[in-house]
Length: 194
Picture (cartoon, rainbow, N blue to C red):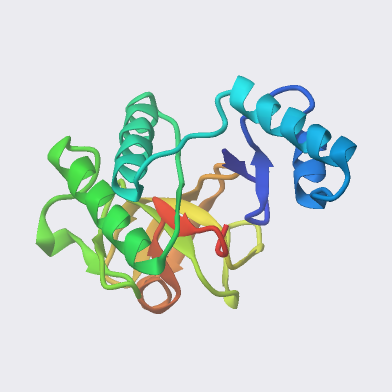
């Protein structure tokens, strides 16, 4: 999935008609009305037919999702896994960081990394997400940084960090101080943060 210029989603892998199906799903149905129940059953079957529903134990599903994201990242895609709790998000983010380091996809030298507000150390090659707005942090074209914007770190300096926006490829020089207090690792998030 991609992000729009202001951090919102601009592309999600969908089947034709999934947008309408999502609205129907949100609307729900009436258990007392047999036609409503049948309509809901048909709707759920559409999700099954398009491989959108998966079930199993939390640990199994988390592992399957993680492996799929790693495969997509190895193909050069950006991913963001959605997890149920903040603790799961932190653990998954840590796991992504360590996996990418082991493959040489992100910085492994502790002298060239720094801690974000979630306590995870990141460096060149890592994906981060902003968790607050800051009018004093701007891109080269004057846009301000916003909650939800996702970046890939390109270079870590003493005061500033060079990043590229995953939404539009724009380049940013972001103060380390802001990253340390306003950003988290960006490989996973809770559904409430997406």
